[in-house]
Image (tube, one colour):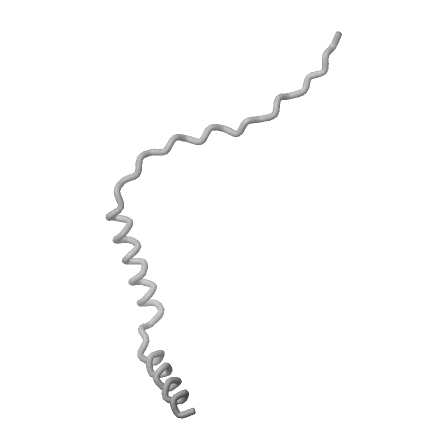
Length: 62
């Protein structure tokens, strides 16, 4: 039981000294921005052809 309490105390000490969520999020966005700038320019992909339609049924007038 003593080890459980010591482990729980160590966790609470970590959470108190943890960085602010907003600063972590800003750092994440900075990393994304950095990765995006390093990425090579992609080729322009071909435009998607329009979806095919079913042919219209026409009645015969005789």
